[in-house]
Length: 191
Image (cartoon, rainbow, N blue to C red; front, side, top):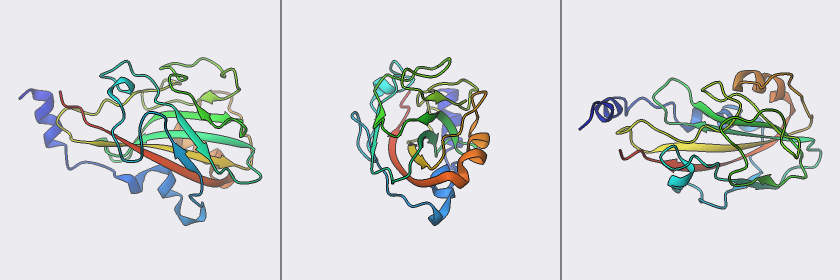
């Protein structure tokens, strides 16, 4: 057994959990009425290896429906609920999504996205500080990790001069969230 696997096993009990994710931390004042799906995995199922750091790191694609009336923009936030830290880590922030856009296509988000997309959305900074997608890469031996793809409907369309991190994003949007929804995918690093 390799050193990294031993470290992963030793850290197994350290997990913030799903209650520490951004969506659940908002409490019941934000209804969970948005349906979130993926063309490549279902709720609580494994994210395909192709969409992880062990594959080519492709963004899995996320779709949503059921945005409430009055939605002016949408935010997608992806967090790892099982990383061995005190709080979940952010794998992706996409903000300024037009509510007419029903999702983000498979492979549409790279590891670094300079400027807005063709449809106007932009990336915030993930836990590595990059404005883009960081694919799942849990520590070997740490067991399954749950990745929450969280969608928030906003009654405003906030803009950001620089790609925001999760804290800055949430300070700007918290009082504008009309509804939320999430999809959880799992991944285990078996190496």
